[in-house]
Length: 265
Image (cartoon, rainbow, N blue to C red; front, side, top):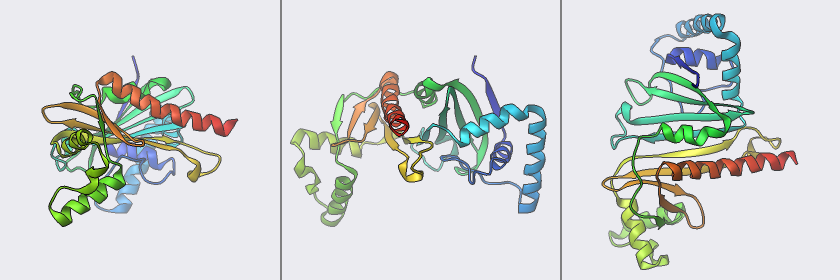
């Protein structure tokens, strides 16, 4: 059974501050309920010492791994249509360092920016994708196998054209009629959940500019199902069950691993 550690929001922030790594790692958020800064800093120091006395070395290693991962998968999304409802917000961080892996999840607080606490779960270093997908809302796959989409630039240009003309956008002129119809219908469909995933290289000998970042999105379409959106030329959406989501994430992780190996050799 995988080990897990549950922290209040203050406990997690206190331990993170002890790493001197700046703000909480993305996609996490925190708003203090302690009014004055000096009171907050004193409480953080007391909390950090208490936790270090109980599980000092273990927690120090975990937080060092979170702060300095080889690979980090960051997930920010919604499990419902109302973005202002705290319970709908999904915030996850899955990291891999050497042979160790962890998934960190943020519980909802009283607002979308407050935290109700954090849970760190130990997972296999090669099981990050499955661990992430298992923590997403459970939704079946969509009914359309493959939908070609416009690039972000084409989509932005098309929206501006539609705003100006209030008519059909020339964006779709570059698509086959069937492709254009499916893409437009998909992008206009109501969603009950959606989000983004980035797969980040943690360190590079070339500095921050040398780090590779890969990106996926998912959309849970009302009365249809889940799709994973893959960047490419062109980008596309694919119906995604659990296995397809895991495979898509693993593909992006493999690209980051290749970048790391290329630096070594």
